[in-house]
Image (cartoon, rainbow, N blue to C red; front, top):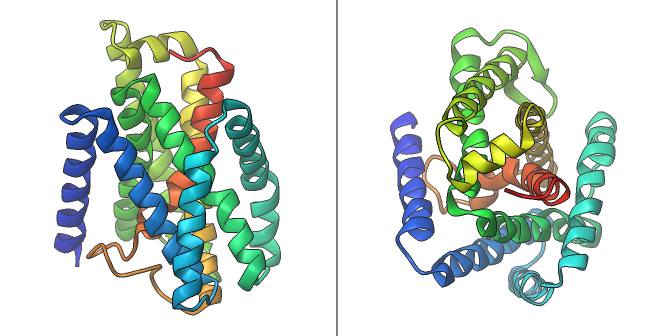
Length: 269
């Protein structure tokens, strides 16, 4: 299982790297559109939609992603999404609300659209900027996984995701901090867009890192709860060792709007 998980993650990283650095920009745009379509299909499945409803929902999500290109609306939608993650989702987790059908489909637009737009907006800051910010989640997620397996004793949210532990959270935070420190050091010696961004943010860079880790864990827990309410283990089966695309981007749905908004408000790189 671990070997399959690592192999799939390696292939995904290769696809992302090739799309960002060795292909025309249209390839990345097409990849994001494909992720939106796939994620919409899976989200509608979690809402118990039947086949034709899932198809329609995925197509509508893709349509809104494509036509919602005005910066004002994108920023507004991402701001609402950030409020949703910071203020509403913790309450949702505490009260363990069970939502399905049309209300859950509506939530899907709030969760998935800002993710797609953020992937595009951050890529415009620079391919390395986007990859480095996504790597915060990949590194913290891997650290949480291995730390939890080795030292995990105290459950983080046993009724939602029994496998997650506070030791895993500590491991994620430590790994992300070290990663942020490496970029802090590299930024003083380089002039790439990512180096410019870190230098521009200053000490806020570490606040952003910690915010991404915290929201990433929340995004992971939220999707776990939605799956538990739907009575499924994974959102899909297209990614061996990982489940579906939602299982792979759950942390990104909560964190990318924060990253995009923070960079936008602070003047970018």
